[in-house]
Structure formats: C-alpha cells, structure tokens
Length: 368
Image (cartoon, rainbow, N blue to C red; front, side, top):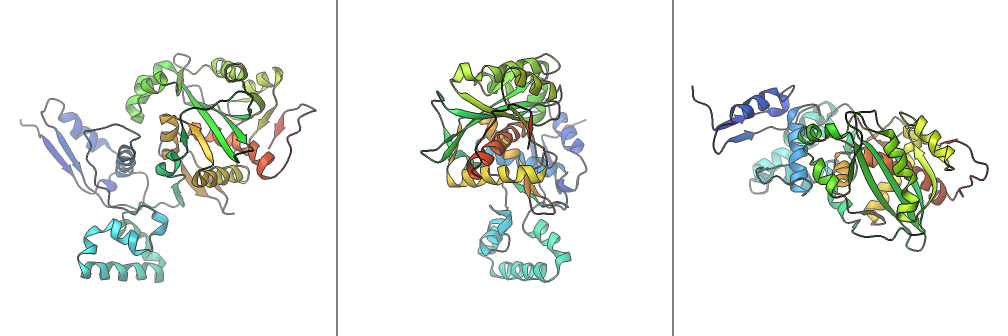
C-alpha cells in the first residue's frame, strides 16, 4: 500500500470537523516532503476547519506565530466591513483587476446583494471570501494597529494602577493585568500575565499552537499548580505587585465567576475589590475605550507576544442595543488577558473618561 506525499482537500469550509484533515496529515508521518493543500471559499458558518486554518495563517503572516512550513494565499478584504468598496472587491478577487468582464460581473452581484438581502450572504462568502455567522462578530483590534502601541520598558514606580483579574476554572487560563493612566501624556499603559496549570502546558501548546514554554521563559506566563491552577499563587502574585513594581493599587476589578474567594482575600488584605459584571451594558464602555485608544496610539502595553495572540483571537459582537463587547465563545482562542485588561479599564473609564473620582474611603465590596 502506497501512502501519499501530497493530499489536497477542496471546500474545507464545508467540513463539520477537521478529522479528515488530521487523518491525512497523520498518514504522512513517515513521508519525506509531506505536503497538504487546503482550498476553500468562505461559508455561512464560523464553526468549520477552514476558519481555524485562516486564523492560524493570519497569525503566521502577522508574525505572531513562527511557522516557516506554512505557505498561505488569503484572498479576502483587509477590512470585511468595507465590503462595498472596489478596493475590497479587488483584494478578494485580484484577477478582476485585469479581467474587466469579471469586475463588472462582481459589481453587478454586489448591487444584487444590496437590493436583495437574501443574496447578501452568498455574495459575502463566495465572492468576498468573508465567513459569516448568525451573529455580527468581527476582529476586535487588528494586530497591526495593536503593535503600534507596544513598548519595551516602563517605569512603574509610584504609578497608580487598577488591577484586572480574569480568574478561570481550575484547568483553564487565568490572567492578571495592571493598567495606569498618565495624565500628562493622556495615555494608558498596561502589563499583563497569564497563568496555566503546569501539567497542561505541553498539551495546550499543541492544541492552541502557542509555545507556552517560551511564553513562560519570557515572563509572559506562569505555570502554577499541577493539574489544576493554583488560585493561591495568583492571589499572592496580585498581593506582590506593589512591592515588586512600586505601584499603588487603587482597586482590583474582577469577574465574580470563580473569583469570590480570591476577592475576599484581597479585601481582607486591605484592597478595594470591585466586581465587574460581565454584561454588555457594563463592558461596552471599556471595550470601546480600549479600541479607540489603541487606534489613536494612546494605549501602550509592555512587549508581550502572548497578549498580542490574545488580542488577535478576540472577537467583538454587538447586542440588541448595539453595545459592543468581547465574546469569549465567538473568539478564536484564549482571550483571558484581554478580558483582564477590560476589567481594569472599566474602572479607569469610570474615573477618567466619565470624570468620576474614585472614592473608597468607606471600604466595601463594590459592584459595577
């Protein structure tokens, strides 16, 4: 029986799961120059193997993941929201730039998509290569815009900070971020860390295609606990921030889920703890603020490749009142570090953007 050096899979977006791809890749284990070719237009679903492949390829192209074995041609608009422009039409259909008949045909199909809403999804998926779903979800912040705000050093000494925490279930990722506001420069500065169980690191690295060992070595991630994450380690990490960085913690914003015991401990240690309700009406101001500040270049973050990957995973959705928020279920990977930043920024939004002075003289557990 001969095994194939090369396999080709067409219309991968129509697959329900990636088992056929994984099976073909596994069959090539002992082959030399093994090659797989995946081809597909977009589909009316975000839950298919091709969306995963496109997201992974985009991270490689954005230098978030190092994979010299991958070659990708992604014909899609740089900005999916701008699908009505001729620029986006050419980006998704480069041959139309030299084939006038094709361009006119596509323009006609675009007009039809506007006049007949029922044909819009077909136009977006088959002619614009935009994956669509029932929800209006989109990339939260483009990687190239985020990276413009990266800094390599920052003197935290004496800075007032709000700390944001996204404490996970015992086997999942946890994140802590501290954010300060520089009144003189009118900019925010953030630093973030992730925490995972040590025994999960190897498997998570394979499944998520993120080298957590390198992230740990670079100080972006901590391994704590064995099979389950050590909440005590995370609690102590937060308690040590003032001593280690010389900051002044104004308050700790947290999601109530899995965090009540930790919040009580921080409160007992003398810190103001504020529950950030994970509801679009509460998260929208911070979500909007971070995005606007990043695009304006006034939201700096300390160099952190894992944080950049978290941002590239994040997907923003709108509720019925047009409030935007980062939806974990719609996101394409871990976003815990982003959520922890948003929890901290919800507090800064109240104090700076809404001109509400923080006043915790009568200490109590506070809920936003």
